[in-house]
Length: 246
Image (cartoon, rainbow, N blue to C red; front, side, top):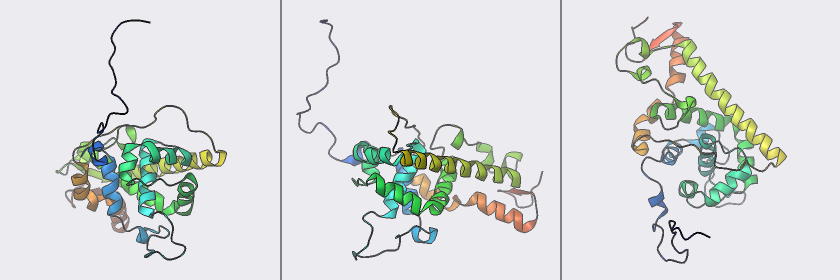
């Protein structure tokens, strides 16, 4: 046993050790605020989520708001939490999720059933969220890496989006969402224990709540560009100059 001094922790019995509010743990740059702002702006009933339009406390009402379960799903997607059991545990112990879900702790069966019952609507919401996250630069890695010139203010080569490029971006996002859903299904079916270690990623990006509010109108921009190309018969579209071509 060495006499060397080490950094000492504080007593677990010490009162008022932690901040008095969960809000204090989630900074203004935390990506969970982007999830919150995004989901709260959605019309879940119009997107096709089951029970999204249920009102009151009548018999048969599901115990969890689909909006809260969607927030949990999106959190799992961007942090690659690959099983419903792991999501259940994270909701009980992860301060980001405690903040995001306001202390709700859905069980893994509820989480899995929500995904199975709403998969088409989940994919649509997930795809739009990823497109916004790309613009905000919220997440690291190649999935959400963004070429700033793509959103440049001049009709340069970087601001010209071809049909092929737009379709490729959407296809890549769809493929990743499907792969994540398949991984969740496989884990749930096998009731496999999640891997050890923390597989969460980190990200940043300014005041995400404010940015999300500003960019909500852009969430369907790629789809709109594709529709415009299809309607006009053109192969390119400029986001800044309707007459620009390369």
